[in-house]
Length: 322
Ligand SMILES: Cc1cc2nc3c(=O)[nH]c(=O)nc-3n(C[C@H](O)[C@H](O)[C@H](O)COP(=O)(O)OP(=O)(O)OC[C@H]3O[C@@H](n4cnc5c(N)ncnc54)[C@H](O)[C@@H]3O)c2cc1C
Image 1: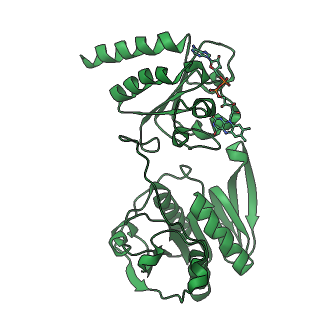
Image 2: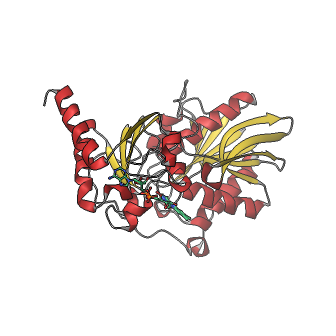
Image 3: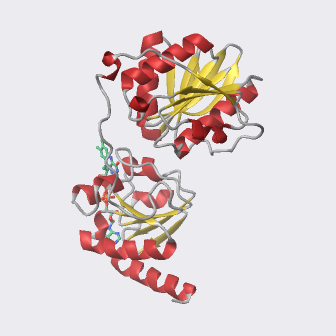
């Protein structure tokens, strides 16, 4: 059996969890096995409809577990592994997924491969390809301990909804004590930003040092408004206070995968490209034709962003009849 442990927030499964679920189903299929899912929190029953094609949903229902408690989560997953003896355990390669899976690996003395993008069983071993160095290096690794613990790199495996019947449910009870809640997330502050997020937007417009000043991001917002997109920035833009840190794209910011990324006044440092290279197409606007980001561009405009963007806005408006 392949076990997926899914992160949920307020009764919804984020895209990264659905991708991990897709990976678990895929692993089950290639190993002619079945998939089971662990869901932790108070509103998890409503999520069972997303788990079509899985054999069983194991529910750990407790309102105390609605916010992340590393030791409690690791204990639940470790005990479930001991009870159910899966061949492999899959979670999303998010900060939380990597955190609890590494704790599980230590508790059970198992190997863990984080950030996997591909996997296949070779006999008793699982061969994986995994992201390293923020994605600039792909590592091939072999997991030999049993069960195999992996986390799935976000955006690497497209979410494919399952087919067939909803799984049977079973309530799991794990004895948790005060010590298991020594560390717990107490509050999650939602971003004040309204509108479409960098993660969900099909078009993302990034601004860098070349935008020159925070007020010049207004033209990026205008363009984003016309294209139903979202605006982000390089670390220079966030360090300068032109954008909030939550808008930073890159190794120490957000990893995005829109249909189109429009990079304006950004040089293309590796730490930035790690965050946007999963974009389907990249349009670069930069006044330096030698800027490294042009090597990654599908389309490029050599010119001053402060002139090119208003011209682009005017053309989009014309095309939309505005
Ligand atoms: C550990 C670590 C983590 C990091 N994490 C991140 C990260 O997550 N995200 C990130 O972005 N960076 C990150 N960085 C920083 C990264 O190395 C670069 O310094 C940063 O991405 C550069 O930002 P930039 O492209 O806006 O600025 P620059 O590199 O200064 O490039 C500005 C570009 O704008 C062009 N330009 C100037 N004026 C105009 C104009 N008027 N019109 C058009 N083009 C113009 C220039 O030709 C140039 O190419 C990290 C660095 C380290 C060491």
